[in-house]
Image (cartoon, rainbow, N blue to C red; front, top):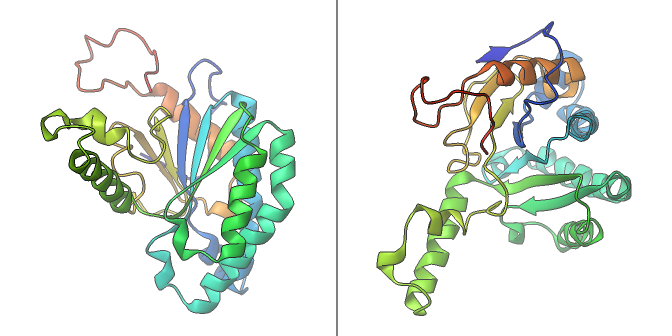
Length: 256
């Protein structure tokens, strides 16, 4: 389902997702419509992250996973990639202490080896500084792809079989899921993509199996609390059956 301009009431405090996953799309188009460089759109998008984080904190959402940089984004123009890396480092320098004070734990998922050493050090520092925080876990997917995630989990399974730690016959869905990124968290129960496109673009392919999908034409830098209210109201109205019939689902209990 999709949404654009939102006039729906705020979400019920009792029916919100435990884990929200977001593709932050539309930074480049936001800048182009203003005849500005794409890098300006990415800066505006970085400010929208705080809108989303504050909303999650205010509504008791336990985990927020943001798709910041996909493994395919390296194919973008070199100057745009360079600007994104600089923005990433500046954001870590400026925001980590504030996130820590707000009770946010920061975690990065994806293949870090492709990033510069200075950026990897900042990522490690941010994770260490916020490790004990429990109000919200903010996961940043950077150089991440859903296919990569399933591949690395499968490789770990193969290594465990080769080392004799497990047998091939013991491999099941739970065994693979336990080796994926975010294995310690409930799977996302609501996915939001801004910018108008209606696809998941290689994001959390395994984890989104039973997730509710919500799309909006709103560009990421224009994200507002009202946009998120609309997504939450729509989520609260849905019947999550997990393969069961409507008759079997007799209440609105959220199972993540």
